Image (cartoon, rainbow, N blue to C red; front, top):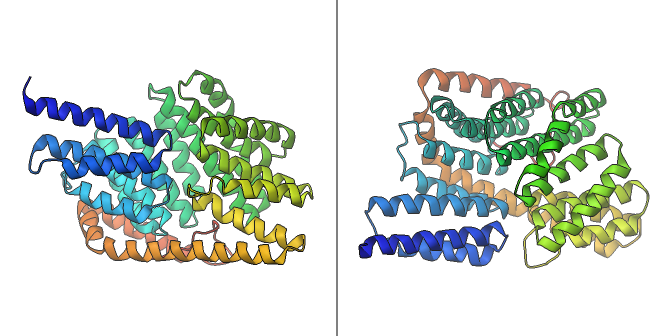
Length: 396
């Protein structure tokens, strides 16, 4: 065995160790380990480029969980220099999927749509069911951000159809979980828009796969993804009015996630429980649960959870006469929204040249069709007609 192969073997072991840290939400040590590996890679070697790509993909997954979406785009730009941008490949598709998710969260759905479309082209051409399903999910997210809930739902169910042909139970339950999450988000948007018929109808769409997913979940080896599915299923139960069933699931999941240290499960569950308490006119119990959402203080709460939690805290503190705390909650909410806008503006700047490269990667006919779709969605965004998600202010 050569010294070079031994060296790369050690790097592979170190990568697996770093990934294990990230999977258990030890983000500080895991990200530091990945940075050390990146810094130590030799230049201009094919094996080094391969490892660099895998390190950046792993870091992007972790940074996504920390809402560091502008940093994710930086890494995506680096990865595009490591893959062939003008040729379909699984790696190009994976970068585009990660990029699309970051762009959608940075209020850039048009760019997210283009990146997801390239990923879908690659997945279909490579006949890769997993990549195709992931790309369809990213397209669904972009359409939902742009106010087209009907198309988003269609695409999400197309993603489920792709994964039903896939052998991995893990990936299938992920798709079911994501679909349930989208259905609940779309229900909330319809209710806020006072479109109650549409809200009821979207909940019914989950009936077709709920039993199938419930049977599958116990067979999946990953307890984490199983709990994530159950959390989204409980969100659905709550919105369907099955409050006792939802509460029981939420309480069990909160306990399990606390023991395991799964904050990505625990915090959204606590938010749901708090909203249930508020609905039952128990403001102090709701407030205690919301405060627990932000524990431990050292680990950042994702905006997807933090923003509605801060709104609820402001509302509840105001109702109970705790005006100083209500003001503090509002200030923290404004601060978070300001940081989000700044990150979006930074991303717009750094995406300027990259967007041209992405557009160039689209076939001419597909690019024109996509431009037409985007124009139609822009025209449809009238206050009386569109579906708006909270914290999704579309930036062109």
